[in-house]
Image (cartoon, rainbow, N blue to C red; front, side):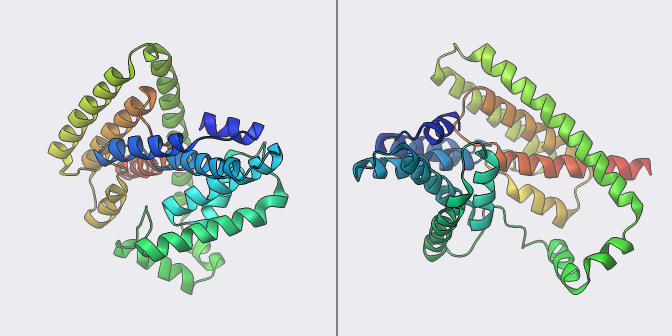
Length: 287
């Protein structure tokens, strides 16, 4: 992500070797079950490919190359998650210091086209799909049939208190995890990369095996979006939530701090949902 920001800020270009190298490394790393997200590599691949093409067609102006890089970033996210609007919001949020509002229309075009291509080739499915959960679908249908005012009035004040508690604790957990990742990264930067990758593979295998033996879930491996769906469908107890959350959080910390190729957005969504379920069980026991 740092390299992508430098390209966007200075209007530089990348090479196709970066594209193919990142695709290969990400496919191998994530295909073998490592718990990172695809958004980081997708952003870099999209920007590298877009700027390489821009350089090939002789784009010289830095501002124009920056616009091309933004299009590649948005198109990559849209294609990865099949979410054109979310891709634009991600780009605006992540690169707010360099983006210009005047190019939003261009970004929309690239995002929509990327989604259309993905849907024509792979179908209209989402990376983080919750539609298989009957509970989630019931909530969606119910919210469509009632006005927001009625929905909010029907809720107890306790649900808002619980939401504040869950948000506060999740913020604390992720802040603490970020400090650990930064400390480990600086402490292990001199270790050869292949040794770090071996450590990542070994630790993820151990954590995934332990989690499977205790919860019968394999969600430590890969992105793990099925863990949220299964927790809703099968009504996880506190021990299952905590065990899976702990193993997934540690695996993500190890992967990120030791330099594993991958993003943090998808893992944060999954681990946040698991922490929410864990804290929810604690609040339920207290009440």
